[in-house]
Length: 205
Ligand code: ATP
Image (cartoon, rainbow, N blue to C red; front, side, top):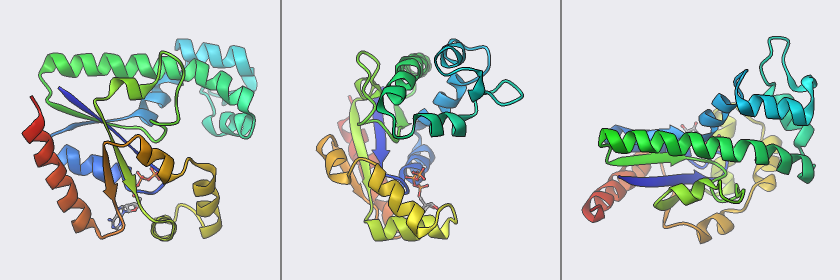
């Protein structure tokens, strides 16, 4: 089984590439969604988060309020690191177990979409250790801002602030085995992914 770790900046095209790969036959996992599982009431990580941050991070229904938690740790490296110490090992274990299952089922290619694949490093629990190769989607700032505005997710100012707060594409590319330039249209992107898929299958043992 070959595992692709897919990462990239906000709005750079990760989910679209992941979807194209799934259409071609890969099994796709989203690390953020796995993270959301780890927030579910009653899990070990849920208990540890309450122990670390108090019950004020809970919704009235007992779920973890991710937005509130995000606000609490924003701009506070010690708190963020505390949260990561809880979440990274949990997500790592869940993703690893999922990969084991796929391996046993005879899955040939898995794509793990992980926005923080390169940044998230908690010793012994970094997702990047679980992947065979790193693919990075890249689009220019102007393209990303336009697409996020079109998706009506974020205003121009919000999009720029997010881009600014993230690791630069240059840093991500340093860790990449494959760089996917996504400044063209969707058919360009699809053609690129199809070609990469063929190359992957040609070199896969
Ligand atoms: P996020 O960081 O927000 O999760 P992402 O990196 O997963 O974003 P996508 O959701 O794949 O990026 O793409 C962002 C937006 O741009 C989506 O609305 C998507 O449909 C659109 N998009 C992606 N690639 C292209 C393209 N080549 N041409 C036109 N639109 C595109």
